[in-house]
Image (cartoon, rainbow, N blue to C red; front, top):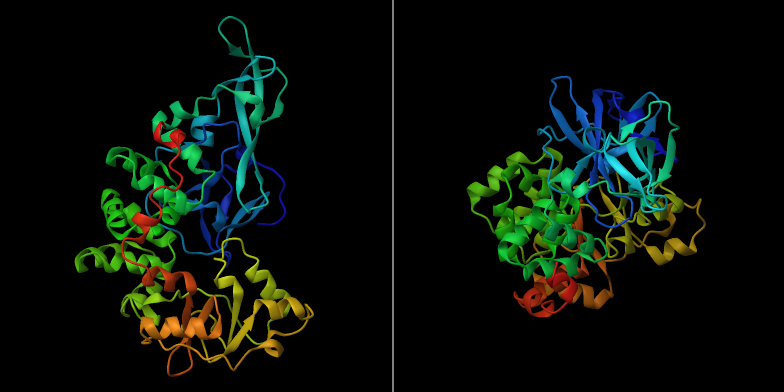
Length: 430
């Protein structure tokens, strides 16, 4: 998104939505925010967009690249066409928050919410940071039309009752609030010890990205159990949000008919890399790799490379190396040239081309390389990430050391190694 400081929900309502090539997608009808029980501003999860067919779909906030006075632009023209269904942890800003009653924490003044404004954070998220309110007066608590409109911080208002608006149960809501402060691996350890009913409530209440992160950290049996609990449409959404290699590992545990059905529900650009990974055995370099490393052409600059590896959503192991290939840069790429290590990038002038810093001597793994060979490769070269290249010199993906460790450890390492992590009394009592 461009540097927009504040956007009111009423300003967004009705704005046309366009893809990156200018194609019309629909119109904004609402904002979706995530439930919070503390005083912190809730995160904006995405937009409800109405298509020309009157179908309403959900567009995640990270897909939005620009918000302008007369239009909203998306990063990709591909939109999940499934009908939008509000989930228990979600609140519609225009549909539910507008006209809600509240109270000023400091003065006790009774308010009516007229509008709400979202603001960007340093982590590229958007939060509903401000509320536009009018004071309610009289014994009936009516809102005076001529009363002054005030814009106040979210934290200064109480009594909005988002728990009631969303229908969220109190216990699961308390867990969600606590989970916001925890790493995905710690949340997974806690979720494993919850009763089945509460575990399902929590899964139903998490947004797709967060649940995908947690699912990746669960043992296979727990992954399958939660996936089977979800509707097929949401299960496909979760698989799309997972890293392709983790999604492939999970799908490989399902019956072929279930695999095909879920892959068919996924967006084609999300399912294709997963299908390619499913063609390899899980204990080979091809089965271990991720098809989404950082790939640049030789004429990219060092500054561009550094900008890519600064991406907060990029796993740390993948950020240690940039792969240089001829076009196309999507895997399988054009001819593989070599790699540039991130320490080398830090030592080069920003305007220098990455081609001048390429390490072309580093051996590459073949997709059929067994786990033992992959392990020896990482030990020999002291790497956190390594290229997987086919016989025609196309980069297929990259193996990271965490995936190697995951397959080297005993199958039950998640149960035994994380059993006591993050299980505080506060979690147990939530």
